[in-house]
Length: 343
Ligand code: FAD
Image 1 (cartoon, rainbow, N blue to C red):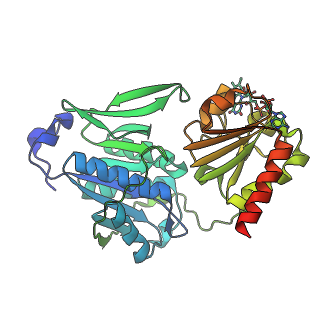
Image 2: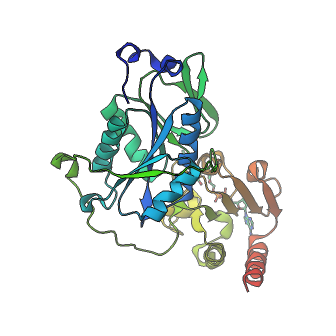
Image 3: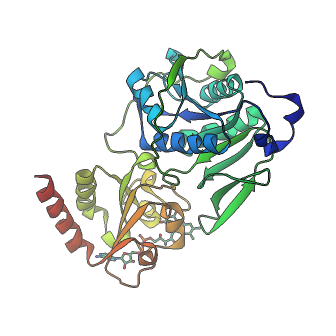
C-alpha cells in the first residue's frame, strides 16, 4: 500500500494513476451482531471501491464471532480487521476513533465509510480531524467522480434541499445515511485478520464498563420500523394501542414535539427538526399533521404510512400509503388484523 509521493496532493485525480488504494468501512456491532445499516455501509463502501478500482477492508471492534464477521463478505468486504480487546468491548468515541484512524493508516485508506448512526455521527468528525480528511456526514448517494472531482450529495436544510460537496482532501470520510443506498450483495470470501491497535492511554480516558438496558424496547434511532403518534391521540391515556401496535410489529415508538412537550411521552421519542432524525424502513404516523418541522426528521423514511382523519392533512402529500380515518377506529382494526395474521 505505497502512496507515490507525486500524487499526494493532487486530490482525486490520482484515481487514474497506477497505485494501490483502499476503502475502509467501520462496522459497528451491537451485542456481537451487525445490523442492516452496517451491511448497507459495506455495500456502499464496496461500490466506492469498485468505482475507484480498489479493495475494501472492514474494521470491527468488540467481541464479534467469526461467523458474524464472515457475513460482511456477502456485501464485498475482502479483508476484515477484527479488534477484540476487553477495554474496547463497548463503544467509546475517543478510543474507537483512535482505532479506526490507526486502521485507516495501516491500510493506507483513501476513503473511510461509516454509517451515519449515533456512533457514526460521533466518530466521523473525530476521524476526519485525526486524518486531516474532508468529511461529508449524511451522504445519500454514491460519490460522483466527475473530471477528477469527488462529489458527494447530502440532504441540507432539514431535507428541503440537497448539498453537493466536493472533497478535495486526499483522504475522505463519508457517513452514509441509513436507507439511502440499500443493501447490495456482492459475495467475496473475506480474509479475517486480528488487529491490535496501539491505543494511547489518553484515548482510554473513558471506558464503558457495562451497559445496563433500561428497557427491552427497540431503540428509536436504530429502529427499522417506527410507529409514531401525535396530538390527534388526545392524551397520554390513549397510547396503549400505539404500544400494542408497535409491539406486534417489533417497532419502536415515536411522537411529535407537542406530545413530548406536554409530557404525554418522553422527550427521547420526539422526532423532527428539533428531535431525533430517523430513516426507518417503515414510518407509521398516526394523528400527526405533517408540519414541516416534523417531516424534517422523518421524510427520509423508506415507506411512510399516514393515518389521519383530515384528508387535507399535509402529511398525506409525502405518504406512500394513506388512510383517511379516525385513529381510534383504524388502529384497533390494524391490531386485530395483525393478531389474526400472527395467530
Ligand atoms: P397537530 O398539528 O395538532 O395535528 C394533529 C393531527 O391529528 C391533525 O392533522 C388532525 O387532523 C389529526 N387528528 C386529530 N384527531 C384525530 C383522530 N381521532 N384520528 C386521526 N387523526 C386525528 N414538531 C415536531 O413534531 N418535531 C419537531 O422536531 C418540531 N420542531 C419544531 C421546531 C420549531 C422551531 C417550531 C416552530 C415547531 C416545531 N415543531 C416540531 C412543531 C410543529 O410545527 C407542529 O406544531 C407539530 O409537529 C404538530 O404536532 P402534531 O401533528 O402532533 O399536532
